[in-house]
Image (cartoon, rainbow, N blue to C red):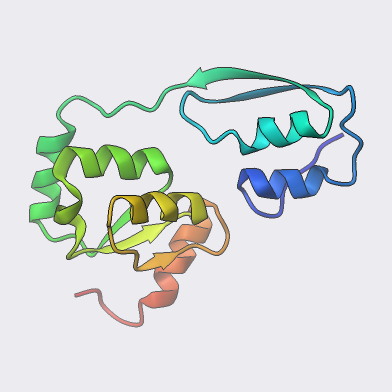
Length: 147
């Protein structure tokens, strides 16, 4: 059985799985080392046996702070954030205040919460939590040449 959530967040997957009995089901969740526990915790509460495996880690690349400062000095029109780790890594590399004068676009509500945590103003959040949704959100705010 294949199931795709309508919204690409844990809550969306839980909603898609809601009609199914989870009692005794064995579920493997392969995910980032740093991730919210809402999915495994809720599935366990519904009776599933859940194993969480760290499939990858998001770590900032060497030289991030220097490179990010170079790019920000060129006054980009937008900074896009596709995950909480992108917010965290950039904010910790250059400081949240470095992003206060630039329009920001968030891929979804979890990323938006992380922006708020760092005090970074949000310009727009995608309504479809995909990269294409993020692009569409930016395009919907742009009526002419970016300034």
